[in-house]
Image (cartoon, rainbow, N blue to C red; front, side):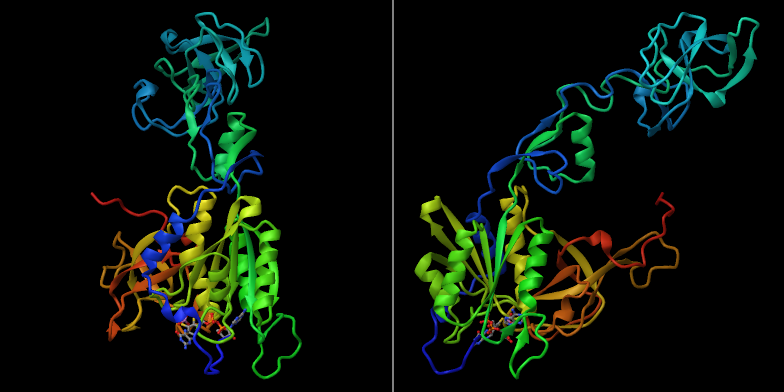
Length: 472
Ligand SMILES: Nc1nc2c(c(=O)[nH]1)N[C@H]1C(S)=C(S)[C@@H](COP(=O)(O)OP(=O)(O)OC[C@H]3O[C@@H](n4cnc5c(N)ncnc54)[C@H](O)[C@@H]3O)O[C@H]1N2
Ligand code: MOO
C-alpha cells in the first residue's frame, strides 16, 4: 500500500522506465524453457512437445475402402485429385473388368483377414474393409444393382460404372507415411494432436514441464473475499483469486500464498515459501509503488537482481521483474511484482507474465499475437504513457459496405471507463488496443493494433453467414 508518510522514497523512484516491448524482450531473455518430462499421451494434452513424433508404421497399414468426394470426373486417377473421404460400402473390383454382371465371391469387412479376388468376380466390401488381393478399386453400392442369388446361393450384382485403378481406395501410407514426422518439437498438443498420437501408437511423449506459479497478495487493507463486512479502507482481495485463475488457465500448476501483511518480514517469508514449494514463478500484487510500505522492490534488490521496476504503460507502470537465485536447488525463481490495482495486475499478467509462461512451457513464439482492429468508439489518449485499452473485438461488416457484401473486419468496442481499479473494464475483453502516447482523442473508425487475450474463437456474434459467394 502506498502510504504518503513523507518517508524516503523506495529505490523505485530511480528505475529507468522501459517500453513494454523492451520489457518483454528482457523477460524472454531471462526465461528458459523448462526441462522435458515423459507423459502418457492423454495427460500430454495442452502441453508442448519437446521432441519430434514419427509414425513408426504406415497409416493406413492396408489398402482400405473409402468414399472419396472426387472433385471432378470419376475416370481421373484418384491419386491426382485431392478429395475428402468418408467410409464406403460397395464392391471391390478389378477395374479392368469394367461394367457388367458378376458373382459376389466373398465379403470383406474391417477386421477380417482378406481373401484373394479372382478376375471377373467382385467382393462385397464394408466401410474401412481391407481391399482383397487381386482387386484394385471399389464401386459404391449406389452405382451397382443387386440381382439376387442363384440356385447355389451365389449372389450376383451388376456393376454399372467404369472406374479407374485405385478408385475409392485409401492406399497404404496415404494418411501418414512410415517414418514421417507427424508432430514436431514445439507443437502444442490439443485434441487433434492427441488423436494423432493415438493413431501412431505414441502412448508416451516428451513434453515440456508446465511452470509452477505461486501467487501472493500484499497489503494491510486486503481481506479475504468471504469477509462478511469491511471496515473503512478495507477491500476484498480480487487479485489473488484472479491471478490464480489466470495462471491455471495457461495450464500452470498454482500455489496460493495468501495475503502478506505490510511488513518486510511477512513479504520475505512468503518469498521463502514460494521457493520451498518449488515455484518457478512468483507473482506478487501491491506494494511495488513509491510508498514507505512498498516492500517488494527493496526485498528483491536484496535477494536477487531487479531487471526493471517501471514500464511506460497504462495501466501497470510500477511493474517489476526480478530473478532470485536458489543456489541450494541450483535454479532461480522469477518474480513479477505486479501493481496492486486489479486491472493493472491482470493487464500486466497478460503482457509480461503470459509470454514468460509460454516460453517456459516450450512455445516457439511466446509473444502475444498482434492483430489489427477498427475502433468503434472515440478513445481519449494519454500524453504520458501508451495505453493498453481493454476492448471486445468482433467480426463485422465495414462501415458503408453494401448489404450482403462479402467482406468483414474486426471491430473493437471499448469496455468503457479504463481506470485501473475498475475490473469491469476487463469483463469479456478479448483484446488490448495499443493506443499510442499522445494528446487528444483517437477518433472512432481508426485502425489500431491490438494484442489478443485468450480465445478469439469465443468472440461475440454477429458472425458472418456460413455460406458466402466467393469473389470471382
Ligand atoms: N507517488 C506515486 N504513487 C503511485 C504511483 C507513482 O508513480 N507515484 N503509481 C501509481 C500506479 S500507476 C499504480 S498502478 C499503483 C500501484 O501501487 P502498488 O502496486 O504499490 O499497490 P498498492 O498501493 O498496494 O495498491 C494499489 C490499489 O490497489 C488495491 N489493491 C491492492 N491489492 C489488491 C488486491 N489484492 N485486490 C484488490 N485490490 C487491491 C489497493 O487497495 C489500492 O487501491 O501505485 C500508484 N501510486
Ligand atoms: O499504472 Mo497504474 O496501473 O495507472 O494504475
